[in-house]
Structures are given as C-alpha cells and as structure tokens.
Image 1 (cartoon, helix red, strand yellow):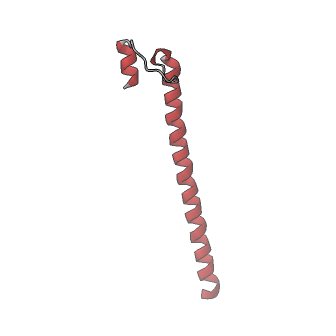
Image 2 (cartoon, rainbow, N blue to C red; image 1 turned 120 degrees about the vertical axis):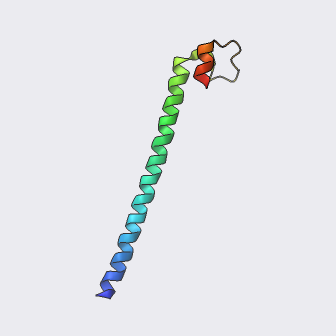
Image 3 (tube, rainbow, N blue to C red; image 1 turned 180 degrees about the horizontal axis):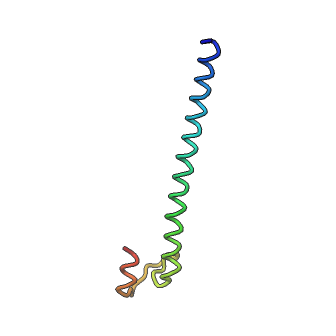
Length: 69
C-alpha cells in the first residue's frame, strides 16, 4: 500500500504546488494589467499631463495636478 500511496501523494503535492504557483503568477499579471489600464485611463483623460512624451508638463491646472497624485 505504501509503495503506491507515497508516490501518489508526492505527485498530488507537486501538482498542487504547480497549480498554486500558476495562480499566483496569474494574479500578479492581472494586478499589473489593472495598474497599466489605470495609467492609460489617466493618460487619455488628461492629455495636458504629457505622460507619454519625454518633455515635462509646465503649466498644469489644479485639476491636472490632482490627477497626477
């Protein structure tokens, strides 16, 4: 019984660990994707911030300053 049970238990444990690791990677990917979507939303809603250019925005309105924070 131990001859079959121990390798089976090790196999189940390894599969469970692999599945857990994959779920954690998917969660990290989803968090990064959400953060990037939030950044794009701010960049599109506030073109005066020049978030996608190499030059800094000079004259920001108070509402634009709040969008940066």
